[in-house]
Length: 426
Image: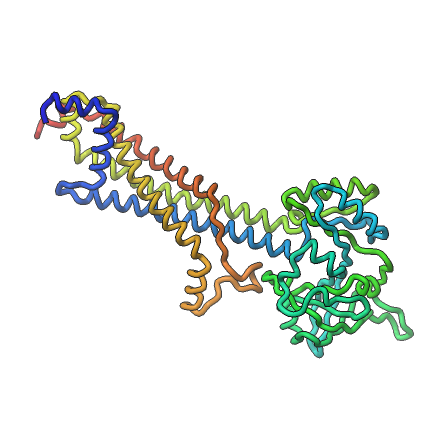
């Protein structure tokens, strides 16, 4: 190449820098170690990005699945009497439906009891409901594996319980259990617990051990009679058009009713769960980002070796009039390309694993003959994943910034190369 042709090439709009930056990734000379280090840097970044995407997707899926299963058994919000039950729950429900964000209202009676089947005994949270109204505010109807919630009729004393509770008591459809409540009846021989025989008319499986093991539904009239509430209800459950507006909507509804009420919503009932998930997500992101940072740091060593290996090339370019800024651009492009290739590979691998997480987990469980998520320890028994575009953008963007920052020092060293010093022994 003559000096005139080289000058034309150098004056091109970044073509020389891009060409050299891409060619220097894979060494075509005898020094193959530089190519090996470049490959290791790419693999490190790819693994870090993939792991971070998969972990964040699993945390997102866990949060979404947990919220879905909680809301299938509870409502978006609830209003109850501040010092007892709601005597005027019908009028209060009609006023609550006036709010534009309230889609449905259902009364309920809450209590605790003890279920007895033969010699088996288990504590249970009792919820008295009106079946049609309850189906409008929760997803319990979709969780039934035997019978229907509408099988609860007043005076029949039917009960719908979770699958784990049914297995614990050894009962199935049509069997009878005794429900003893924590309110006693005074008799000549002392205080006796109030008891009633119920027939199992339905079994549900929410997929959340807390509910499958410890919750049972009966008709609200039967519950009111058993707990001696008369015509009162414990409170009202609300279904909203936007579940994330629950905290402010339930307060607005309570204020519109007048008087003193106790309000709660799904974010308060399980606040610790969702706070711990959010904290875990931030901690995992920070820790796994260090893996990407270490991989990006490898780019520094790679580029320093390239600068040392290409000193004569740099000197020749400087002799032809290439500016120090162009030399810096060459190595910045090289390091950025290494990072981008690693990020793209990690993105593809992470997305592939995230979309097949449950399949991989089930395969590993069958291979190792173990259970990673025991339902009696964790809140869910599967490992779902939810891929979010925002997480991908944050992960890939942060990784790219780290990779570009790693190129600054080696590129600066390359730009400081003195042509005469570099060519002295050539």
